[in-house]
Amino acid sequence: ELLNEPHDGLTEERWQETVPALLSAIRDSNPYRVVIVGPVDWNDLDSLDKLQLPEEDQRLIATFHYYRLFTFTTQGAGWVEGSQAWIGTLWQGTTEEREAVRRDFIKAAAWASRNNRPLYLGEFGSHDAADMKSRELWTRTVAREAERQGLTWSYWDFCFNFGAYDIGAGAWREPLLNALMDK
Image (tube, rainbow, N blue to C red):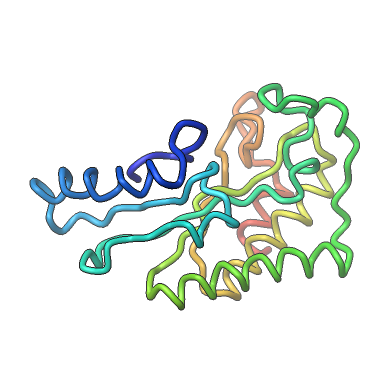
């Protein structure tokens, strides 16, 4: 990946100027390497339309990250200002909640189709301060909807605050593992 979650000083304009230069440097020594490139604003789905990839370079995979509903997925995260107030936010898998995910991923898949690019959901997950049943439902919904829309995915993260694996216990968090593996 060229850069994980470009943001702040890397405005849309600066990022679009930087991407070709970075790709040129990579292609000098690695002309066939597949490179992942995401949009500005922390690889946000709504910024995909701002991402312009060089048409002549077909060894690129676009990526985006997905943490919606943000007050649910980042509740209690120390690096997110105000997130302590969100503790207790549930994600119950209501029709409305699932439809919001579906709409988002249809939008992502449409971008991929319009731009003739593979699209990779490079991060999704929920903080361990969230209710485990909600985390399981959300994770299952996001993974399955990504698959329905033809998107590959990667869960964030393995064994830290969002982790599917509890390193202290030396065991998988079974609800998350089952959600990811569709069990």
